[in-house]
Amino acid sequence: MASRTSVIWVTRDEDEDGPLCTALRARGLEVVLDPLVRTIIESDGVEAASTLKREHWLVLTSPRSVELVSEMAVHREPRVAVVGETSAHLARARGFRVKHVAPSRCAEGVWRYLSREHAGERICFMRSRKAAMPEGYFSHLDVIDLYDTAPRQAGADTPSRAMLITLTSGAVVKACVDQFGELPLPA
Image (cartoon, rainbow, N blue to C red; front, top):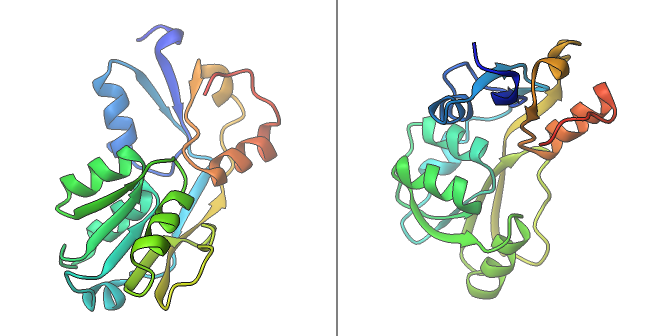
């Protein structure tokens, strides 16, 4: 068994062999998987994605969106805009044509770039229902709610079993604060 200092609590809704758990174990960490949210699939988005062409844009603002879209039987033709290098790496590994990575770690960077350079083009935003809508005017914006999240009750003893906690989304942070208040764990 690993020392407590190498135990990390994964709060994301994924399986034991999910991408975050796998990456952490590959770095020699012991994982305590006890999600604080559960993912509810809202739409498969296949119909919308199947009409996208090479000149269109597909916006994916989270690793979860990349994972869900990549599981669909859709072609990888459209240009893809993502938030962050994690999503970019994941999208490229799954065969998508990543053409823009937001310079900041928030979706605002994607929307600023697209509104300045591509506002009149077709853009498909596949998102969490909780993701913010883009500011600005886009004449051909399709918004597809792929998934939503709902709080999930974690084990009362989980915080005492780990030395670190992963906080991978705003929904996870909110669920953590709602359930535990302030935790004395580095994130």
